[in-house]
Image (cartoon, rainbow, N blue to C red; front, side):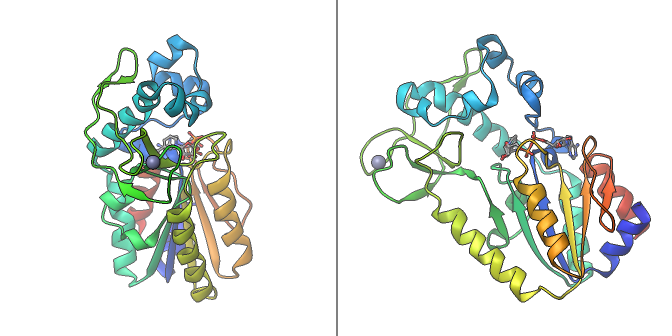
Length: 271
Ligand SMILES: NC(=O)c1ccc[n+]([C@@H]2O[C@H](COP(=O)([O-])OP(=O)(O)OC[C@H]3O[C@@H](n4cnc5c(N)ncnc54)[C@H](O)[C@@H]3O)[C@@H](O)[C@H]2O)c1
Ligand SMILES: [Zn+2]
């Protein structure tokens, strides 16, 4: 399987990198796989009996903003401090070696691809980004970069004042992320990224495409569906699905049951 994956990488003219929360695990980030995984990462929410779905809810910014910002402020600080693992750089080296084109499609909101040197105009963040803010109401369509200093009391997962605010109306702002039961998310930034990606796919439809999917879970299957759509619709596309627990995909696509970093390193050793 690894040899087969290495062959696909060797001859790829286009790389499409699709990534879910598992891509960050080897950089030390938690995924939120099931309530158990979420509570292991956030013991304070285990004590309160709150699931990921209950914490990732825009209503908190309205009802109890210091609690809403507790979760997202903690994650903002965590993602700012994280150093992307070597796997991010290996793929960039492959792209450079093949003089290939690339695009990243991720459900992660953590900005790790930009941090690892991938170009901002070559990334779709399908659920938005924690590094951008919007008004919680929202009073307008503005989205602005998150330069806020966020001070979190981790014992109770609450943000200490002052909380980030909208300069338009003075209300508390929130990350420009699609949450659960979310009618207020401003989609423009993601929609622009999606259009750029669709143009990219059309332009390169007939070339040899390597889709490298890493850490995409089946509970919210957006990323897995994206990889499969490209894999089945494009004649010269092969999906390499890397996942330690749920790597299954039908041949001719390639399934690697291991962590992202390990899988990428093993492929790299064969190139
Ligand atoms: N870093 C982030 O931005 C972040 C973190 C957690 C959740 N989320 C959001 O929550 C939702 C959760 O969906 P999801 O499918 O991305 O995550 P998920 O938590 O449901 O699943 C994570 C997947 O990663 C796999 N995995 C675990 N360790 C891995 C490793 N070392 N290498 C590769 N894969 C590994 C797991 O088997 C699982 O399939 C997404 O919408 C995502 O936006 C984002
Ligand atoms: Zn506002």
